[in-house]
Image (cartoon, rainbow, N blue to C red):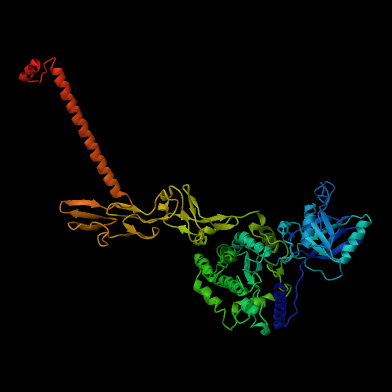
Length: 619
């Protein structure tokens, strides 16, 4: 299946290029390599920047070249005879630039082994006479990405020609020291005080390591990107690669599953299985939504909202959870305060046999013009019309952007290690909030805002952080009544929150409803739920009822707030206390009379009548 799909994609790419009547032109981004010694090799040479690691954009590095006596292709770990870092520079010495041969293993593995060996940079000598090429990361699915070492590579890499590599080896064999200056100061143009950059990406989140790296970059770089854009330091534009289906394949199963607008705009199937899961057309439509979101946000002078939308969509609407849908996308758009209808109008009808102006412009932009070259790698970052090479990470990309400003015009972010933003101040960051209780799930961090349910007064809220947060555990009713309904009327207070419940809301007896937003009074009299004796009359009250018989009122229902229960308990307690006091009084009186009777047998009492005394004495 993968082989057939690859053949189809090759045909589509060729057809696209034929449509534009151009020859595919992939531009190899280069930097300068200056050899300062030995004298026989002095000069400035070109080398190709690798598409991994961290190039020192805007700077330079000086080092001494070492060519290992064994493991010269760098495909296995370097054994330093007990030294874990055999190429680490000594105090006062030049950093080590390790020279290895091309072939036998992936470029990334060579760089990883060099880095673990202590090298400050790696130079790969080509093994054939040809123009310089770009060293890229391995393709997904070939077993090369079983380890996450690629993301851990943080040294710069460069490919040198076979001729230059052979000359360096010969000088080293003769015992000469080869000193090199790697210079990236002119790798990116820096004409003025504003940097223009493009990010070519994809909404597909199931394409493996590269998709994960792309999503991670968007999430971590968002804060810096938004601040630079809001301050006017940069002009950012997102782009999406699409292909078109050749006329001969339009009716094929592959084209129908991977294309929209009658084969005009296509994307690969996420899992290369056309019988299950999401199709390529789903990816194209979501790419189009992202492009339309940027168009609408840009028209409203808030282009930086694109970063919020893409980040939130990745979190809330992933493919693996079967939420990669228009409905989920609309909820994210609405949470950010953007008009959903405008986005839908921009997307148009994917089944219509017409051009989509947004995607047609994307296809035109994909073809390289001037020094930029065609965009063929996803993801690709283009800065001041030059393709960025290196690790797609916040620090590395920010350094590259800063190097593209005209000297002395760099924003302060380029001069400080970190920055602070507060994205929660605008539209609450698109997160859940309870304005009445002044509670929000929006939390600002240096990497941008996150929507995370809070902990308030030792009460933990749980939920997705975007549309729902509920209080849990005991004492939850103390915070905003646990998010439940609460009402007061006729001097009574009723609540749908119960403290001994860990979560949820339930209308109290005498009410019905969802407990969260509303509880309506039940008319027990009308619904004949109480007071049904023939001689009784029933009167409904809020949350309760009154029932009267011929001898007067005698019953009332129990309510949620506990008002009637507490009244009954209070009355019972009062009656009990009164009864107990009366009982104690009667006992005291009885004891007093008994004591007096006994004492009267032995002595007269002042308040005892004479007859009574005499009688007692006779007895």
